[in-house]
Length: 442
Image (cartoon, rainbow, N blue to C red):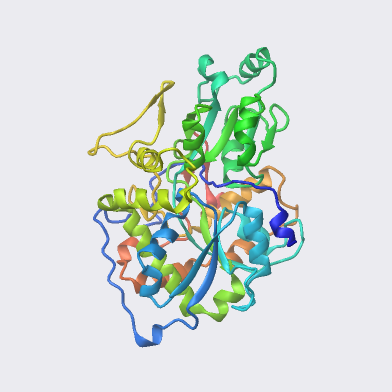
């Protein structure tokens, strides 16, 4: 049996993270009007190859890929055979990307796809269990917002406050119920892992020292919550809704509250594929960009909800009422105010924490800022997940291909005012008042 098929199910998805953005003079604000792409195509723009295999993990975060395929936006630019291959873990995606397709001849591998940061950088430098380097390019961000930290029901009566506060009383309360409080994510090292660690550290709680952070495959999470083995979990919206529906947890804080407009998951591909097929790569980016713009259009909300729900229900009722639950997320995403769960249902006052794909608050969501790559790698260094001699900036320059994003954006008619002029989004400020200045970071 192929060793990849023997991996345990790990339902990670994530992202999210952490910041209220300061006014940034280095990037142009995006226009508030809905963008109508006007592609500039020539006969010479025909892709060198029409097929590609992209790995995805079922989640709201991959909506642009689903839309680009369903609405034939890939085909619009000549990519007529785009295969979206679902996986159950990031480990599977990275392993299959490492195998590759041998530039179109190997059906066991994939050419790239949906990744969390900084996984492409880790693969590029061979920082993985196999210790093998796979040259990677990170091409675009897929979204912002979408993650949640949720709390088990056994702690709800004690009104855990999501703020900088003494943590020991929480543990004392948990022990009264027979077991200490633990945190959980589906896969170590993911964005959800980093958001959870950041949130804990903001309360002067040191992961592994003051509280354990467990890696629990999502297939096992419900049982572990029932056994009081997991009380604070960082999850993507889709899995948060499933636990909410099962009446096991309630949302404590959205990642968008920790870091407003934080960088989400990304599209990354093998560098050899991109280098051999530059026109095909641009075609993929153009199709996904148009899909991102389509996803953010309020007029498409119902169709988007339906598309995502049907894409991942697989007839197995992953959530009891998928259309209802997905609609709840997109329209009335749960928020926490003074300890009371509320929903913002006003059409004139959209949920500021809703997942976005192209832009939000006049800020580009899709453009891959190098300053965000720097934040992720600095967090990895903070938590001792990088070797001491890791060259952060050099790796970012090798992996981040924001130049290809700009080329694709111009090709679909994105105006210059919607294209960032700097690879840095500037100083970021988080919910606890701390800030990240890319200019003063290694």
